[in-house]
Picture 1 (cartoon, rainbow, N blue to C red):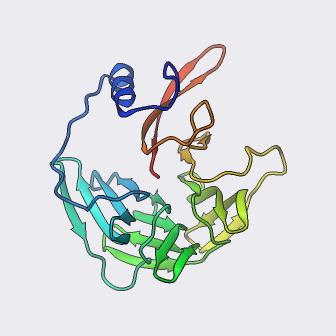
Picture 2 (cartoon, rainbow, N blue to C red):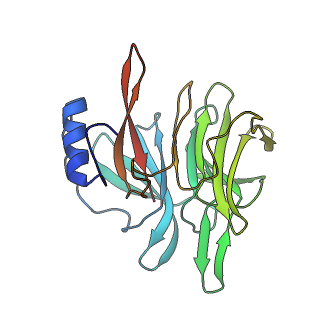
Length: 240
């Protein structure tokens, strides 16, 4: 982040967003999903809406699905038929444009029996509201993931389990349900968890920490990418 020292605050975010993009925040009607943290969401370009799944609320883990209509600023509960993913938090959600579906993978579940790390993959068909279960690699949570539209696959990096943190990269092809370890032999960013990845032809990784190495809270942050001839500002949304 540029021009902001120490731990970013919501005031910083509002000012940075306003100055950099000429945008204004507007508080919307709160009626909709219950308060939660560590949920995951995608943008559905066909319906011009945000699709939200899961998270952890005051009463425990959540497994509900909600759609926020960006045209009229309204929430609608989606209730898919049949079996779906178990309630969870710190999972990933990406949009598969080819199949017009939301892919959910990994996360953590806490209940009366303790904490469980998850590595299942589910696809929600956004046309029929149907869940489909897919195959899996090593169970973990706190991963960073994007959907690569050119290869048509989910790409995930890092995460943490009871064995520690990871720095591996996996691709998941939703057409054949196959996982492939594509971790390069070259230098890695390092083991980590609870970071973010932005989409595009180049992947930009942030580990969710400020310049002092401290974990920052959920919010929208500005990343300033500089070279000798160019400067680019990218918005990153961090959900914890």
